[in-house]
Amino acid sequence: MQRYAGKNVLISGGGSGIGHAICLRLAAEGANIILIDKDLKEGQSVEQELKLQNTKVLFVQADITSEADVEKVHKEATLFFGTIDVLVNNAGAAFAENYAMTTLENWNQDIALNLTGHYMLTRLFLPDMEAQGKGAITNISSVNGAQSFGNPAYSAAKAGVISFTQTLAIEYGPKGIRANVVLPGTIETPVWQTRKDSRPEVFELVKGWYPVGRVGRPEDIAA
Image (tube, rainbow, N blue to C red; front, top):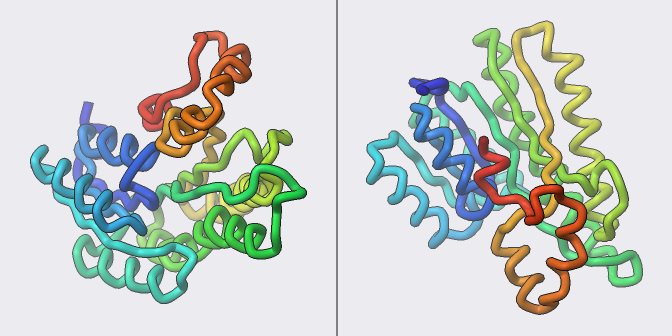
């Protein structure tokens, strides 16, 4: 089903994990893809993968915590595609497992990447959506934003994403722009694999949370 045929979709953090899965899923449904990633190699790999599937795609290497980089993304995406129909704010990471380990630098990193970066992309692309009277914004938060599972700075940022999305939905829904938030649980991403490799028992600790007996997969979120 080509639900996104002809739609221009921008996805941050599209080089791996959930972002990669979203790129593949939406491309399969007909979308044109603009993918952003800080990692040049991963971003180029996904770009090539999509081109082999005859998807119209643009990769922009960018750090969404940098205002200059985000402005570059907006400029290049606008030149290449004109307008963006869907913005997926996905990029994110966690830098400290508990409060005792959380330095001011960790705190600022987490807030900048997981919350402020979403705001900066939205700030630039939202006026374009408003001008065309339609659009959709999907923000990827986390269950950490709704309940404490450690990673306090990351969790605070993800809670902020939930509130930010609610504000967008209330203020811009009447203007034809939808805003939704997704709260993934434990997902098999490269970060998860690194954690599992260092602590093999971690799977046994969390699998009881999930009735299917496994953690989620990126494709589950992309669907």
